[in-house]
Image (cartoon, rainbow, N blue to C red):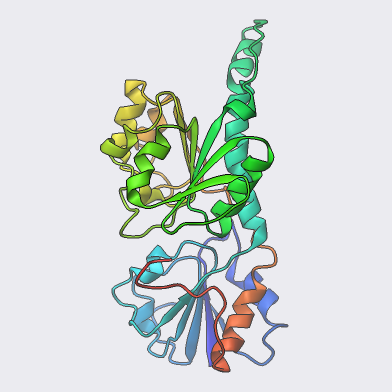
Length: 311
């Protein structure tokens, strides 16, 4: 029973670096770094950032795909992945905290008028503009799981009015929690900022189309740190150009890296970041070894995904 590491992103972490972390936790276990054209019949666990096309077919005895992160849409949506293969993800507190801070940073950027102050300074213009009070500002957080719940709590702790939305009803101190598709348009109409931490599922893909985007409060800012297919790109661009929205901040995209000719690059009131909102997974990598051992011993897995639900 072997483990395969397939990352293909040396700017984040190399396969060898992860292997060096796992070796002391899995003594005697064969750990392959990357895969070529060969078939690896000894591999029963795949640790990957995404499930690349054709990989599942080269692992005939695969039993578990361990996502090195949170989003699992490439795993559960891979037509070559047999239904019996289980999928798990990581839930590191470090990445959850970073994503929450990312959303907070861009809200505070606008609350404190940082962009306009920078522009004034470049023009040598003295233009005092009062910051907006947190207590008079409403933030909507879409998705209230491990990451979204932390995000909502951080905003609530800073005296923002926080509206939370999820598939099933949650209870979070200081957060007005709502659930169900019927409640979303009315929630959006109240929010000055909307931070989406939603996963990619059949229910969320293309959720923010022209119809739903139009329900956002005029002047609101949409922040997406969830998955790139949540938003219909052309509909968001049209709404931004119309002036209905105050702006948007996107860290995730349908295609990454974002193509150089994509219209997003040319929207003045759109901020683009290169999928960096949650970077570090300190403390979460131990779960890779733990799930390998749990699988081999027939024990319940950590953070197992419902493949039908998609998260």
